[in-house]
Amino acid sequence: MVNPNNDTITAVPGIKIGHYTDLIGATGCTIAMMPDYGATAGVEVRGAAPGTRETDLLKPGTLVQKINAILLGGGSAYGLAAADGVMQYLEENNTGFETRSGIVPIVPGAILFDLGIGNPKARPTSDDGYQAAKLASNKPVIQGTIGAGTGATVSKFGGIQNAIKGGLGSKAISIDETFTIGSLMVVNASGDIIDPETGILITGSRTHDNEFISSRDLIFNNQTPQIPQSETNTTIGIVATNIPLTVEEANRIAIMAHSGIARSILPSYGMGDGDTLFVVSTALESTPSPIDLTRLGTIAAWTVEQAILNAVQLNSGLSGIPSAKEYTTKTSE
Image 1 (cartoon, rainbow, N blue to C red):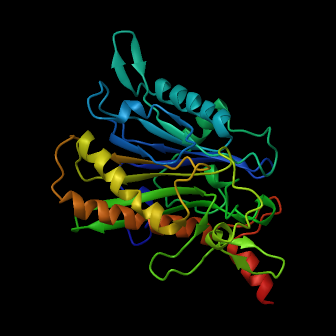
Image 2: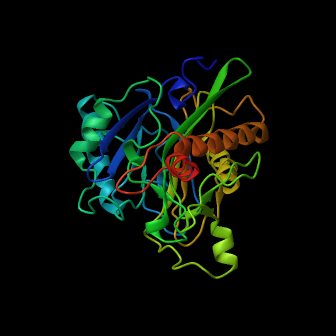
């Protein structure tokens, strides 16, 4: 069961999370480390502008059946270099896919564009990825402006100058007193964050009247200063569980869990987003799930929603971009 003192993704047995955070440059990376024996994985890419690594390897019918870590990073495509450091750390610990020529660690990843705030020359490096992997632990995940979520922003249809701070969030829940499923989401969306239970607008573009205006209203009234460009956004994340899954099932859960993004980010999956979601099972054997996949996918999507909400409600402002809490508190004074 989920530890009452930890309802984040590290409540899933075998998952460890490590961060590298650069508050000056407004960037960072987050590494999810799998058990030594690896994890079964799947992926679903929905956005039109993804920046990814090794995602083709996670589809059914490929040779490698287990992964060793996942990189979530800022820095746009430059940030993918952080995975090299994760590979180095894993190789030093003799962890990876065995070949006759030695170990090859399997580290899929996805990045977001955070070069619009802070220092655009600050990007996660191989050394940063190495240190994040080395520091990974199963302690409760610190949420907000940290790791890959450091330079994340949301609600950009009113222009980056009117955006709200995004971030990193996580949520986990027990299933049938035996299994755990959890999500970790890095929210750097072009659109707004909506509470799917109430429909309440959590973030929107800041206005001259010190209020929020929704991206939908800006779009419907053709008032967007500019449609966020393809390189400026992306929501990326991981769903993890100790429920046994096959590769095919992990990919199906990734598809279903994406509905959590669609319900809590409006709009989502646009030309300016690279939305990517990984699913991993830390069960020792890759066997068919003992739980109905429709039920499992529904619960997975809920954890994605909650992680997204946490990402924007537990963060703090950076580089002149306020958090939703800071902005609404200031305007109510």
